[in-house]
Image (cartoon, rainbow, N blue to C red; front, side):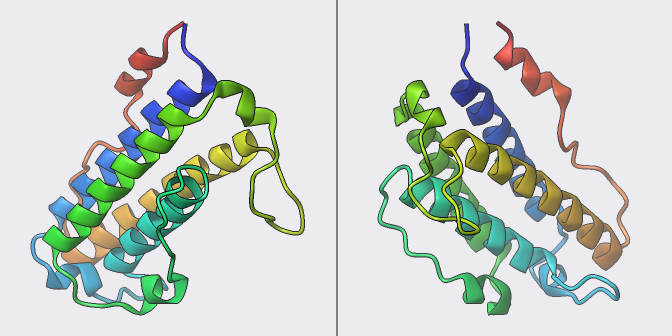
Length: 168
């Protein structure tokens, strides 16, 4: 029998794997940073934002990794290589997996350690929010890649096959 935490771990891993496939699908480093009309954020910055967000809220806050987030640089940094982004995604995935594996299921109903929006929602609510936030930006990243490169090939995001690992 699996728990909400193990279900979330599967979904975060699936979506971080998708993030890595999206970054790898860009044909070169420069296309990650192409400005696309109507899209305020390029693919490279979306990847940096997702990594920073997860490393801060899950890795550092719940897993106590000591990561210090620099949110403005997530949107101002330019011209990193695909390899550098893939390494940051790998680190984020490791930190998320470790933090979720060490979190006792009973803690899900406790208040999240940081105040968010003037309140302390439960840890479970924050983790669910972070999962949907990741999926939302994966969609933006996919559209950016397609528009910036002209390649409409799918990288297979949000596969239901991963849910086989969450059966009860």
